[in-house]
Length: 269
Image (cartoon, rainbow, N blue to C red; front, side, top):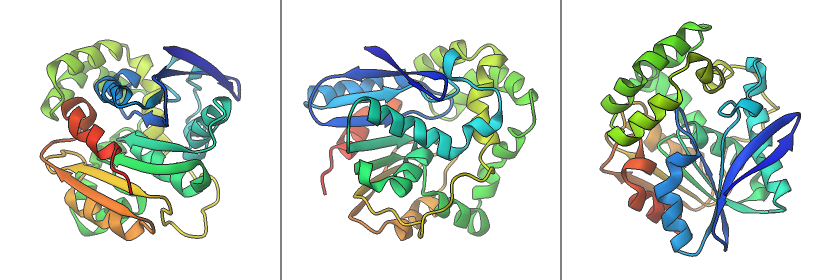
């Protein structure tokens, strides 16, 4: 069921299914809440409650124009605001792609709100910085620099999105759906602003960069965007029970391997 909540003048939306212990699922780029459909179905069948926000920039009434509105601390506050709206003190947080990047930060900044963390595909941010210097990750992430240009990336991504998604391993059904959804360049400005705000200073850093909540990290060995160096280095930034799963898959694991992702989410420490 699609529901709404208000925060700082934005009308944010989320989907909610099932009952039981809450699991919050954060989608990435260029995805949406429906990208979690197969995983959510399995979690609900297993007796859990799934909460799937449509992220800032992905819906008309929650897409501010300024790139500063997409700083990570603002994005994290959206999710904490959702937990407060639902009166949820602690949840199991799951993130994929950009949702994974955000999940790492939420776990770092708000550990008291996170019961368990599951991240799919996206290494810890500090592991990524290390990999830029010690592997080919900078080459893999070159598109991030291209996305900093105003307006042009929207037109290019809208035109070639289906081809990009198919070549990176997403199935044709989802590639068709997402390319149709984002066929107008203007609909991509919010999602691309996540990249444009990546290098903006957000809230002050916590005393350390370690994650202090139980964590599962699942990474596909054929991921076209996020390499093995950063994935393996992530262990250095976890100061809690940690399970690293390397699977036979690519980047789009929630859509391509929902049974594996569900299994990873249900691992208990």
